[in-house]
Length: 564
Image 1 (tube, rainbow, N blue to C red):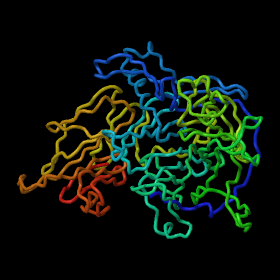
Image 2: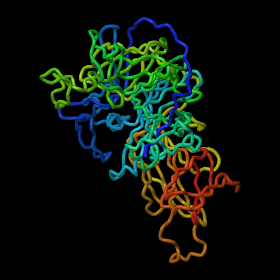
Image 3: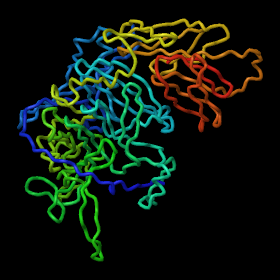
Image 4: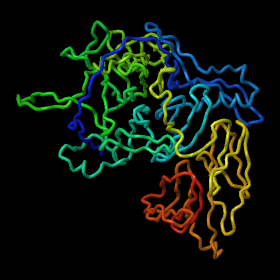
């Protein structure tokens, strides 16, 4: 059952700033969804089979795009850096570089932060949502190089309406969709809490929550004391540390002479701009006195500003601020709310192949005055590109940030391509490698131990005679994590249980699978000190642990050793 909790009653009023004049700028973004005549898909061109890499190479439309805006006209989006088939064919490193753009897809959120990009792509294994995984990748925003890649489980709750860096405190915030989460008792027992009988959410609540995120571990920490059920489509923080998001808005009203939508009272309607308090995670609102149907007065809480005047799709969009102008939010959204006009002049659902004439799913660049909430449509976008991240080239609030949110506590190389061999008890070993090459390792367990699992960028590798081979290296920084299992001293294999827990080392902790609900998980450091102990409530679990440390892990009767 979907549950709701009213957060609007806790109101905060924001201070307002004076707007600035329009300016010429260069917008950049991660191309997310270009709708073609034959449906929603990104096109690709087959470059050929690379026999040395044993890999088919494709040039795809995914990638980093730029658009120049001179204050009046918006140029056609162009890929930057460009990918030219004649320049990359026959060069292994360049072919993998171009082919990597196939993975630059932020269907679960993306962000630009100080010269780097992070994309979160949701994928499922064997097409079952219960096994949904998140592919997290970090990119160089200038060269397009893939810097790192890892897989996170569904429980990581990385689906977001957007992420953004706050230059005032050096933290990254986002609006994350908390699938399968339950509200705490102090909220469900509140008189303002109620249930929507029309929604069946058997796996718990599923709403948005303002959170911080550690990009070195991808750990999400909620701030909001509850969940929002608005359908947020953007999230951005300006140079003053003010956080804004937009909700999708439908077509309920009429179009005025300026092309903006208004309700029957002449007020702007459509998508709504909200501001957040980053300390409490609450929406900032203003108290408005109203009257009910019986004429009785009551106080309602409303957004600080009216609606934008333009409608918006229930699809991923992107917004950003120029570092030099905290008062205007640039938004790449949809035109006509994704609806076409039929022969009677009414908006309706028309075949997508007619988009060039009916305006369906066309996109546009808007600017929103955060002081008034009103949006201005600057220009339609050629070929209706939409983006999962957006930033102003050379003028983003995160540029020259003093804190690198991607670095975490690890000391790692900053030049060249490497694999981190996670097994040393003190310090790290980084092996320099070449992009496009595969690497084979023979792993020798200590006496009394045997190999349990090996992961490469959070993918489990097949072990054959204590030997593993990586896939072709496609990122600059990679991690090979080896887990050793304590051997049964009795050597009586026939009495071993058929169901054995599996412990996989990940970038940021452990992933436990094939366990038994009720098993006790115990983690010790190398000195035998208890680090963590908990009862497993399911067959799978994800455990967050500090990096650069050696752990002894016990799940039920299984004992393994792993260095993260």
